[in-house]
Image (cartoon, rainbow, N blue to C red):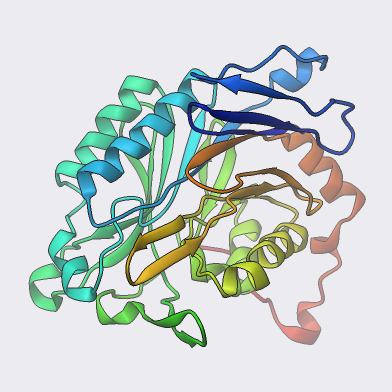
Length: 328
């Protein structure tokens, strides 16, 4: 297992060592960032490499795309096979009215740009939460929070519409009423096969509902992804704890791309994008500001852990039911 962080140009690049590997910490200037050769077995370098991206979206859709495209191209240059973008990678609006006005259908101009980008880079993309005008837009005048997976040919291979909407009031963080503009999705999406492994799709607030992650792992998921825009109060208290808990209880990798910083005068996000391995160890993490973090996915390690600690064989549905029925 290997994880490391790439910061934007003209900042430092740090390499994070992971349990089981004796890799010294070091920093190098990166303009553009270049990885220094390391003393590590060739087999580790053959494992799939994924990039988890961290951005600060604003209402400016064009600038948001430029920022995301730069990170995606950097991920491709560094050898990643799949890049993860956070929830609301397309924009974060000031109010529900602006959210609805800026939204697009999946066949709109913005997704076409990402389709072209995936083809250009030869990279799979997890587009973590797209403000989608669905087929019922004319009737409802509301949207879906849609997680889209593009393959390296730019084709849409999976979509998941967020099923748990964040309608909460947290002191010090301000009220959140996602349902003012968004319709909850009707179903879960079966895990999708990618070059990194079988990915189970979720979005942000979904991580508070372990039944969803249990359903995805029982349907074959090896990687759970939670693209997010966590707030400044819930972030420090719950973000890492929840992600590590989901990884431990499902024995999956967890990839969580996050929004960070101040989006406009009304909203800010916690950041701290990360990758967690099936043991619950954070193997890669972004620090402050936009950037990306890289980690290798070791499915042999995952299978070994599940064999050594076979919790799914030890469940007692006769006592408490089948929590998280497998996705049909």
